[in-house]
Length: 318
Length: 263
Image (cartoon, rainbow over all chains, first blue to last red; front, side):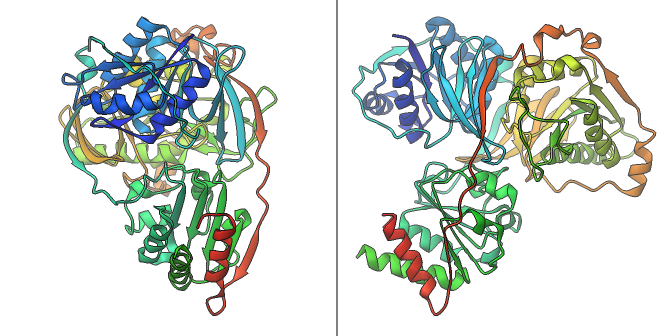
C-alpha cells in the first residue's frame, strides 16, 4: 500500500487534533506514516498509534529549533525522496503552508492549500476547497510530482484505528542557508482555557457592537464551551487580540455553530465564517447584511440578549 | 538600498468574482485593483525608506506579473510613493499556479538589485499565502514572514510576528524576503502630488524571453495542479429572525440552540 506522510502538528509532543484528522484522511489514501519533528516523541507516538499511524519517522530538532520553516522543509524533502509517498498532508496554518510551499518547489511537486476535504481518486487524491469568501467550491488534484496538500481544521472527523506506530529515527542534513532566519525572542501566548479558535465546534464572535466590552461574548461562549472570536473592526479598535480575528486576514473558521454578536458582516468577515454549518447573529441593526446568511437571528442589543441567553443556556444545562 | 515590492492585481472582492470556462479566475471581465494586502507591503517599504532619512539612497521598485490591466496595480503603488515599476507581461503566463508565478517573480527579482523583497501576507483572490516562501526558496535567501513590525539597521532586519502560540521576534540578514500583515500599519492614500508624480515614473515591461524563462514552464498547461470543477455555492437561505422584546429574544435563542442540540 502507498505510504502517506503526515507532518505532525504538536507542541512539545502534545499532538494537536488536526493531526488526528490528517491521519484519518491519510487512511483513505493509503498507509499513514507520521513525521514527527521535535522532542518528546514518546508522548506523541501513543496518540499517533491511536489514530492509525503505521510508522513514526522522528527527526530530532536539537539542531534546527529556533529557526523558521526552511529546515523542516529540508527534512521533509529528504523523507519524500526516501519513501516516495503517495501524498504529503500538512496542517493548513501559517507555518504548515510555508513548509508545504518550500517542499513544493524543492520536489517540483504540485501544492494544494486549504483543503476542506480530501478523497481518493483514480489518479491521486482529489481535494475540495472553498474559495472567493466561501462563494465557490473547487475540486482539484495534483498533476506533477508528489501531491502536497495542506488541510484545514475540521476537514474530517477523527476516527480511531490501531496503528503499529513503529518509531524510526531519521538522520537529515540541514543546510546552513536554511538556518538564516532565527527566532531571537519568543513570548508564549497566555492560555485562555477555551478551545482553539480554528478547531472549535462552536465559535462566538464579537464586533463593533460590543463597544469594547467582550464580557457578554466571553460568558456566552463559556456557557456553550465555545471559542471566542472577533471581527476586524473590534481588533483594529484594540478591543481583542489579532490572533482571535475571524475573517480574510485572520482565521477562517468552519464550526458546527457560529454566533456573531454585534457584527454587521462585511465581506472581509464573511470570508472567514461563511462555511459554518449553523449561523446565528445578534445585532441591533435589522439591516445588518449578516442577517441574510443566518439560520437564526435576534434583532436586539447584545448587551442584554447575551447575558439573558447565557442564563437561559446555563439553566437548561441544569 | 534597494527594495522590490511584489504586488498582485486581483479581482475586486466586492465584485462578482467568478471562474472562466477553463476554471481559471476571470481576471479581465471583473474590475480589478491592487490587492489590498499588498498595499501594506508598499506602505512598509515607504516607511523603511523614510526612516533612512534624506540623502539615503533607497530605491523602491514595484514588481507585478499579470495581464495588461495589472499596470493599474503598479500605478497605484507609484502614486503612493514607490520609485519605479516592472510589469512582467506575457500571454504564456495566463493560468499560472503559485509555483510558476514564483518562478517568474524570482527570475525578475534576480535582474533587479534587491536587498529586501517585500510581499503582502496573501493575495485577496487565491489567498494561498505561499508565494513569499516559494520566492525565498527559489532565491535561496532567508524568509521572515507575517510581520506586524519591520525594523532595519544596516543589513540586519528584525520583525515581530504575532503567531498562534507566541509573539516572536525574528532576525535575519539581507538580502531576504519579508511579508507583512494588515497589522503592520494603515496604508497611505495617494496624495494629489503623488498622483501627478507617478505619471513621470518609469515602468518597464518585460516578457518571459527577457527573463530567460521558457514559455513551457508557465501557464495553465504547465501548472502542477489541475482544477477539475468549480461550483458556485448555493446561497444560504435566511432562517427565522426575531425581534428582542422584554427578553424574549434570549429565550427563543436558547430554544433554537436546544432544537439543534447545541445544549
